[in-house]
Length: 530
Image 1 (spheres, rainbow, N blue to C red):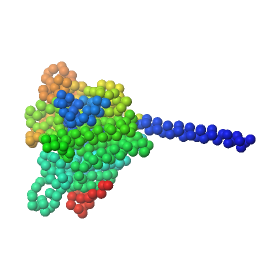
Image 2 (tube, rainbow, N blue to C red):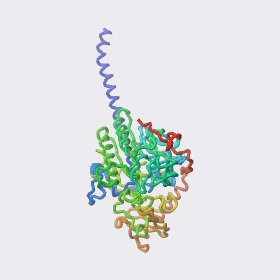
Image 3 (spheres, rainbow, N blue to C red):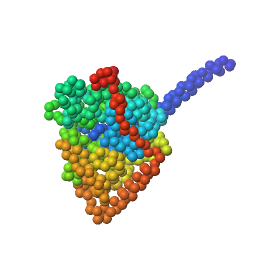
Image 4 (cartoon, one colour):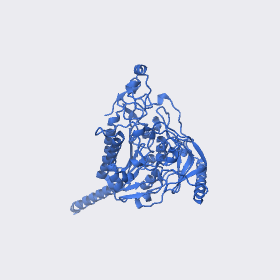
């Protein structure tokens, strides 16, 4: 009787076991889907006008994939890089803090011994601790030695260049003004014979490609770099399910920074347009892979680190209507390195099927610093409470068409005028105030004079996108804006001065700090990438 009763219960027990296992599997899958994936694509030196969708009247067709992404998602028309040059912008994006807080106010170099201060916390570190798989592909530019490298700042995997792609020689240089010289031009015998300068690339060392913590190719091949990047990105996306974790992919390609190395389809093609189309195709490949795997659970956020590098002439992008003509009429450029709109207003698109309403546009005032707060909010991850932040949670703007963004945004000095990192340009609503102005080098070499302004210059960007004619100081409109900005600026500077979590970056250099695969070889030459 007992034996027969036990055997009759076996099918029931098996069913219960299978049911429990299936439920557990469903729960794990559900938990996986609860945490969204994040793909942050950060273009380099890209202009607001480079995105076709931002200037439909121009009828260009250089960014078809990004145009589709904008049609299927959200185009942010008043989005700004946190600074107008590389390292400070990238540091602020990762930390959600102005350079005066995180310590990174200007660029790190080939021989930099340090980088983003180790006291700073990045959102990839926080996602990693929360169970995310985190990967970075592309330009880092926040320190390449030891603890300062990407795999020690929150990334499980890294493949990329430790700094800008003009900070080292290559065997087949890309397009630049002035042209970069090939690596063999720097051999001592050749230098004595040719008596050449280094051209448009800064270093007499081969440009390195690093995987995790190892130099795997030096000098790297600029002309095959995009292919390597796309291959790595697609592998990360397609393997997400196998890893069983949500993921962050921070993709920072070399485009549109010189030297450009695009595939030219015909003799009439411009190098810049071809490179822009290659960037667009890269975005398209990433979007397609995401759509095919876990698309409805993945946010793709495309933006730029700063505006175009105007002194690079035909190899620089378009600022669109944001020409900074008050400055350019007096000499110099008004894009990268300046606090004119062309230096920091960047093309931005957010895409998340089923979550971000399709074919929407927002003019909310936002910054790359807001990626930190927004991503953590969407992931359900709390930032550390031992520091102060400057980011804004834009979740409601992305998901619910909320149009109200930041009340104030400050644009740090980035090399064209004043002390690096100082906050002497500010936005509130449609108004923008300059306590200092200055120009970067323009195409052809012209520069303008730095000028302090007390009272500040104030422009109405709704009616004067070109920043051509400042408001008259004796008008009620001017007085109201000047008072509000001065008060907020004073509050912010006091807040930073009293912030116990402010970091100081070490900008010291040593030639031994430069990445070198094989010191016994000219240009540190090696090739071990499989």
